[in-house]
Length: 51
Image (tube, rainbow, N blue to C red):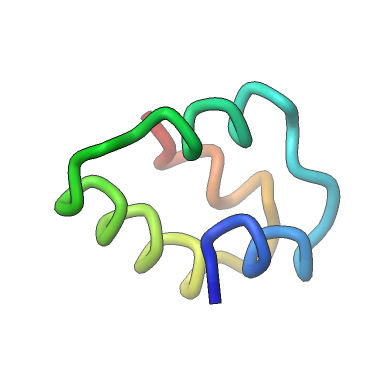
């Protein structure tokens, strides 16, 4: 399951987040965001740690 799909289950995903996720090429960063998305209870909670 992709990060976007995980977040969409939680709510509306802002366009800037979608863009940033699609632009990222570093696997370690994608793994970090994937872990954050799985733990988050909302998109807003995810965004607090999203950089």
